[in-house]
Amino acid sequence: MSQYYEHYRKSSIGLALIDSLDELIQSGHINPQLAMRVLAQFDMSIAEALSTRVRNRVQFKAHLDNYRSLDDVWTFVLSNPAFRFEQDSVTAEKVKIVACKARVPGES
Image (cartoon, rainbow, N blue to C red; front, side, top):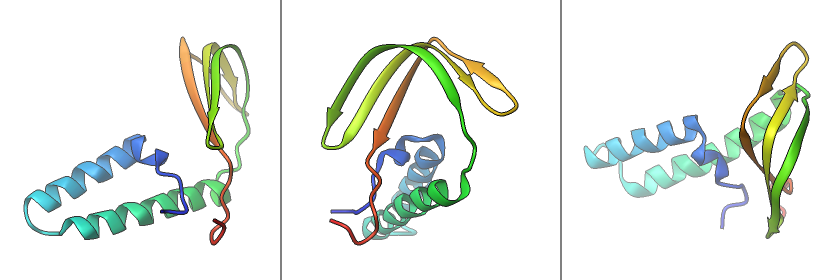
């Protein structure tokens, strides 16, 4: 089992990577095992980049519609959130936040 979460694969960059890997597999340029290794490396790299390079803070207010926890993964569904960044603010109708316990490489 991978030591990194795979939920970043559902981001726009993750989906683009999966589409590209699928095309390479279909055209015979790479095999599925290599594609899986690339995805595992992506999981590791995106988690590391987000934990070491992102330093922005955000404050938000919203109505909590729903929350749940399963296997140390929390999911929050918010309605009418207002996010306030250092230089900007953003609103939306609904937002889903997925929060996971940080994993340290080598920890099982």
